[in-house]
Length: 253
Image 1 (cartoon, rainbow, N blue to C red):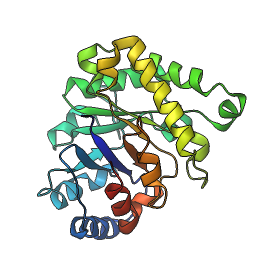
Image 2: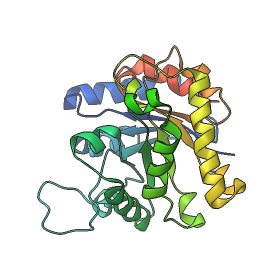
Image 3: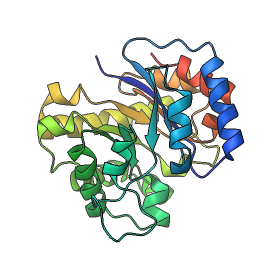
């Protein structure tokens, strides 16, 4: 059974006191997680020790990093390697978020290196893919997303690809208040799974969790997550409000 995941991406938000309060509220919330479900908190790097401490007694509430460097170590001032993150207990790292691709010019080739670095220390890449508005309006979203998968992930072996979680982000729906309909989300998720099946076979494709990441809220999470190929969400703004993220977690199927 595929993992069902609610992943919070805090981005560059919250003070230390605010982060502590939010985590306390999450831990105190009446969250019901089944054996195949997880909630993952991708927090700013400076708050990783705090989050690990707060969630230590909750094995299905996990801490992730929002990024890592592709090299193990070296003269890269200000950067953090996957090896460093693993050394403090991080097992999930978000890679290729649309903001990293756009604002920091992260290419597919660079992300392939980062995927390798994360897998090398036995952690899980949360690999983001997705199309901007112009691509969606031109009807070329399938080809666009498939190219991101081919260039960023399809160098992996079958044994490696099953360790990856994919997060589909319709870039046109991030922070805009727009949301893909549940039917649109299912359509592209099914296409992503078909790409995986064509490359690795259907059995492997059925093992890989694919999350939806575009303005997920408590009000729409249940409908989105009810789709057969939508295995949860990568959540931005709504993850900064405990009651909202609680509702999203409890909407997992």
